[in-house]
Amino acid sequence: MQTIGEKLEEARKRKGISIREAAETTKIRSDYLQKFEANSFDIDLPPLYIRGFLRTYTRYLDLDPDRFVNDYNALLTNEGKPVRRESHGRVDFGESARSTEAVETTPAGRSAQERALMLKFGLLAGGGIVVVVLIILLANVLFFHTPAKSAASAQPAAATVQPEASQTLTLTAIDTTRVKVVQDLDGAVLFNGSLARGESKTVKKQGKLLITVESGKNLRMEVNGRSYPIPLEGYGRFALD
Image 1 (cartoon, rainbow, N blue to C red):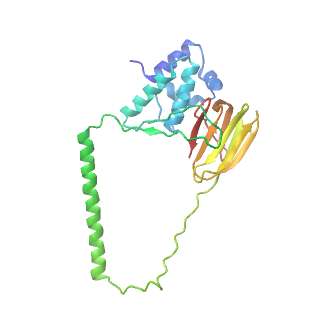
Image 2: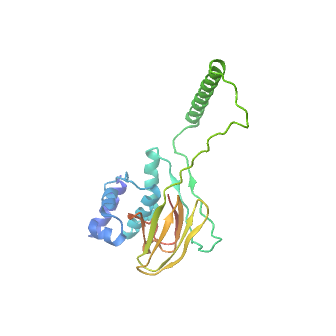
Image 3: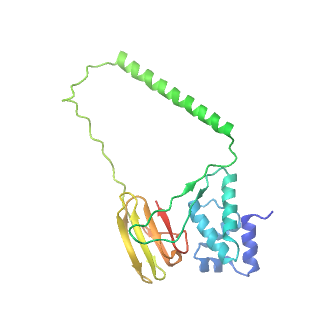
């Protein structure tokens, strides 16, 4: 039976298209396409991005995107990796837009007996840790006991929380599209509007962002000058960590 990569390579050659031509048309890096056709998906991208690229590439080759995404999910399952499926619909750019939640499934092939054994070992390990902690506390009380300080004089040092370093997110419109950027930390709307062709918008990124885009293929994204691919072509919403 042919692998995902063999099917992609065969379809591309049947259309008489080079890797370079396919990369220029789909806006997917040529080294990613070469890895896909080599049936190698071990690239430094989240599975969500890889599924988006697979859908774009298979649609470009006049293949069935859903079939190839299902084959990719099956490949992840066989490798023992969790499969996260995202559901997308038409995007509402209003303030009342509700987020689409991802449903994560557990790895297939793990029997109830294996899960029970794992739970048992986890409980035993947790119990052992509790016993060790109790022994240490008891030893401190018996051998290193010192008079307790009064509550008034005890001044615990304040914990210092280091804020996460801010990053710069730049969105550039390849063609006219509408974009909404929400900061997941506090729900603040950093940008909500249209970008004309060639227009850019830069915002400060603190933690995870939720980005809603009217047409993913018309948008380019950079974080601190490094280009990141948009994981969808049309309407949709995705998270940027």
